[in-house]
Image 1 (tube, rainbow, N blue to C red):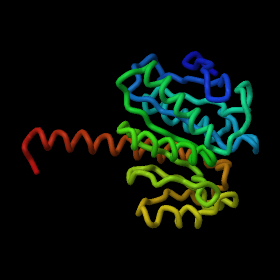
Image 2 (cartoon, helix red, strand yellow; image 1 turned 45 degrees about the vertical axis):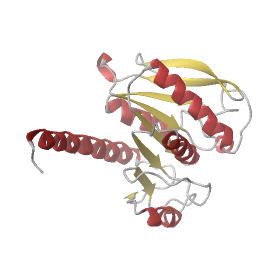
Image 3 (spheres, helix red, strand yellow; image 1 turned 180 degrees about the horizontal axis):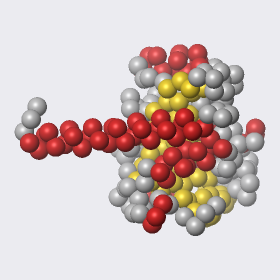
Length: 226
């Protein structure tokens, strides 16, 4: 934890949940909110998982305020594992907490492994409620393991070539009907050992490139160009 990090506690569906908020560096005002969901609680997943922390650092570097929680039954969070149902509810509580604390900002959802299932389900709920997430970043998507919801076309998907927990083939089978590309990291296993930097560099590059394109499109519209 550094001086831009703050621990907090909020009430979830099964009791109190512990979390962490990380602010943009240099005291800059956040340009958005990012919520990070960690891997499976029954297999050692916590908000301090190295992929979850990499996602946090990725969004902090993009100027976002980032929130993570330990799912129910993990660390100091109360309750017991609820197979993704209660965890999705709890991530929804975190969404409400952060949007009230930082009103008016877009919200990005990101997750790793089991956390991708939670975020896909939350994204579906938000879209159905008329408040869609700004964008999703899913690393090691849990296709074939969990009932992943369909995702928006601009979702950033990152997967390891040598993932033997969630095979790349399962992810391709899931996204093929949705026609969504996947960034494949050569030689990476499920936990991206020695490959974490690729996650950060790819996500930040795509995010910044798309933001620049949005600005250019807006300028063309303002000038009356087609």
